[in-house]
Image (cartoon, rainbow, N blue to C red):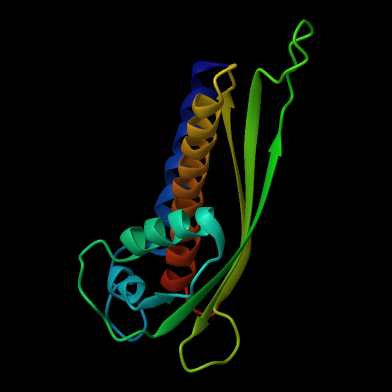
Length: 173
């Protein structure tokens, strides 16, 4: 490729970006329709109880991620989350026959609905995996598994928050 071809490709890229300039909207900027912003809309999400220990971790993380201000807003939306957990032990010690590592897999199906009812605003599935080492110490294995669950819950919360923010920023899409 010659020097001229490189310059032409760069100029084409710049022109394409300039043409898309009006299409790009900051995720947490003001909403185009109805005023307000995504952050205030996210503070108005009521999280329905999520069952189980990991559901408790995920619910706490979602409360903080969606409304880290501590303010109480009148709910405009309701978030429903269903969790599925799996644990696998991919590596087995050939001498002892015991697992030397494990992975905790979490799948979350989520649905955001208006608080007054109606069609879901967004829905989706998020999946995360966290691994941990296992030892011959029982308590260490339990604590490592719990830490992996907590890491998974935080990552799921981040994924769900981002998808909800994108859906609220682009209503009707």
